[in-house]
Image (cartoon, rainbow, N blue to C red; front, side, top):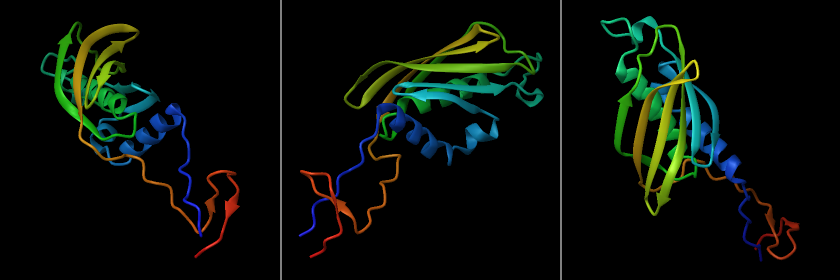
Length: 169
């Protein structure tokens, strides 16, 4: 008789990192805008992006849509940090100052509340350490994991002792 395989135990930080890696591989929007993930953790994420000439509006300042996209991506990585597929339910942004062409923007997302399938996250977008936008996102968990399950081989572990077993029935 074969013992049931024991699922690997991950730390919350490792779960956040693996969730971000899984999302990043298919997030062509964030990659295409030149975003980079600076940090992730349970309920948090920090992303950065440089405002290019093509991201500026008719006044020569950063187009609000690109600033929103950076904040939204930080929101996405923060609310998906628990290995549960989660999407935006509602978002709003307040622009405080213009973004400047050529400057690096940093979006820091943090979880405010999470209960059941709903969450609230605040994201601050800064330029040179000064806030240029405040974003609030409401999330909704839709089910499903981001991290692919570990491949199970013929080896399993005894639930009581943790010892490896290759016994088959």
